[in-house]
Picture (cartoon, rainbow, N blue to C red):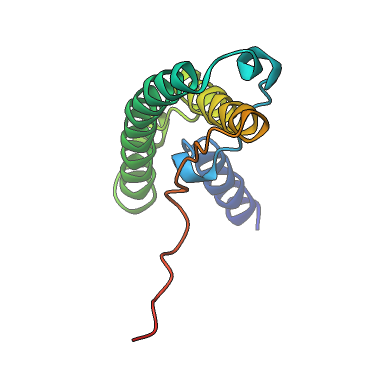
Length: 131
C-alpha cells in the first residue's frame, strides 16, 4: 500500500516537473501603451522583430518539453533516476509568455491605430473552405 502511494507521488512529481509546450503557455500582460505612440511602419517593424524572437523562444521551449517528455518516459519505464533529468519550466517559458504578451500588445496598438497588424495563432485549426 505504502509502495503504491510512493510510486503515485513520484509519477505526479515527475509530470509536474515537465516543461510546458509553447502552445500551453499563457501570455504575460504587456501594456499596449508601450506601442500606441508608434507609427504603423514602426509597429510593423516591432511586430516582425517580436515574432522572430517568439519563434526562436518557442522552438527552444518545445525542445525542452520534448526532452523532458523523453526523460520522464525513460524514467517511468526503464530507469527511474532519469526522472531527475526533467528540468521543467524556466527562463525560456517566461520569455515565451512575455513575447506572447508583447504580440498581444502590438495587436491592440495596431487596432487602435488602424494599422491592420494581426498575428496568426499557430494553435488555431485551419478552417476548411467549401468547394
